[in-house]
Length: 423
Image 1 (cartoon, rainbow, N blue to C red):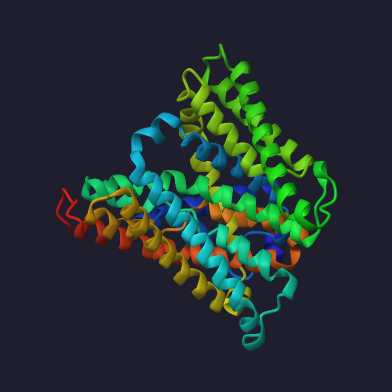
Image 2 (cartoon, rainbow, N blue to C red):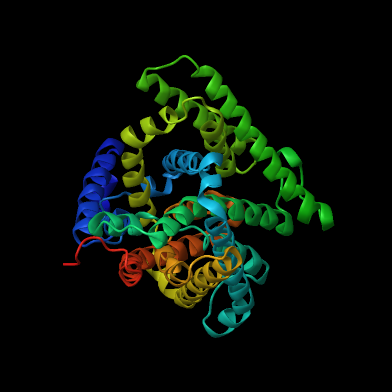
C-alpha cells in the first residue's frame, strides 16, 4: 500500500518530504546529543520503500544527479579548508598525526579485509567474486580515513572545552577528509587499472606497470589540473563581483562544469572539485567570500537532502549478511586511528595528554565517506561490489556517529579541558 502511494508522489512533493523529515530527524538527534547526520541517515532508512514507503524506488534509483550536486559542495568546502597559511600555523604535531592516523586506518582496514575475504566467502556465504576482493578492500580502506568533526564540535560547544586535545582533534579533522579523498582517488584509479576496465581520456587500461602505476598517476594529475583551471576561471569571473547571489551562481556554475568535465573524460570528479576549492582559498584576494556564501545559504539544505537519500539506499538484508565485514572494519579503523595518533605524537614530540586522548575524538566517521560510497554505487564498473560497499559504509557511519560523541566527551573530560560542569 505504501509503495503504491509513494509511486504517485511528484518529485516536488518527494523533496518536501525529504526536507521536512530530515529536519525533524536532525533536531531529534541533536536533542539526543548526537550529530545531525545520524538523524538524517535514520530518516532516510525510515522513509525508504520497505519501511514507511514515502520515498519512491524510482526516485531513489535516479538520485545520482542530486548526490553529485551535494558532493560538489562538500568537496569544495573540504578543499577550502586546505589553506597553506593555516596548515603552516598548525605545526608538525597535527600534520604528523593526521598523516599517520589516516594512513594507518587505510592500510589496516585494507589489509585486514583483503586477507579475510577468502575465509568470509567460505564460512559466511559472502557472494563476492575473488577478482573483486582487492577493489572492495581498497575502497573500504580508503573510506576508513576521514573523520567527522561534528561530535567534537558539539562537545566543545556544550562544555566550553579548550586545550591542546581539543585543538589537535579539530586540526586533524579539518584535513582528514582531504586525506580520505586522496586515498579514495588512488584506490579508485588502481582498481580500474587492475580490473582492466579503464577508458576515457587515457584510453584502455592495458596491463603491467603502465596500467598499475602510470595510468592512475596520470589520472590524478589530470584531475588536479582540471580543478586548478576551473578555479582560476572562477577567480577571473568573480574578480569584481560583490553581490552574494552572483557569487553563488558563479561558484555553482564552476563546480558543476568542473565535475561534469571530469565525468566526461573519466577523471576523478571529487579530486577536481576539492582542488578547485583549495586553489580558491589559497589564491583569492578575499577568499572568505567564496565560502561564507555557500556555508550560510546552501550547505544545510545540501546536507539534509544528501544524507536522507543516502540512508534510503540502506538495505538491511545486505547489511546483515556483511556484519563480519562491518566488525572487521570498525575494529581495524579504531586500531589504526589510535596507533597512528600515538606514533605521530611520538615523532612530533607531542605532550603525553595529546598522545593519550586525541584519538578518542577521531572515532566519528566523516560524512564524506557516504558520498564516496555513493559515487562507487553510481559507477557500473563496480556494480558487483558497490551495493555491499555502500551498506557497509552506511552501517559503520551510523555506528561511529552514535558512539563518537560519547568517546569525545569522555576523552576531553579525562584530559581536563572542560570549562563547564557536566550535567
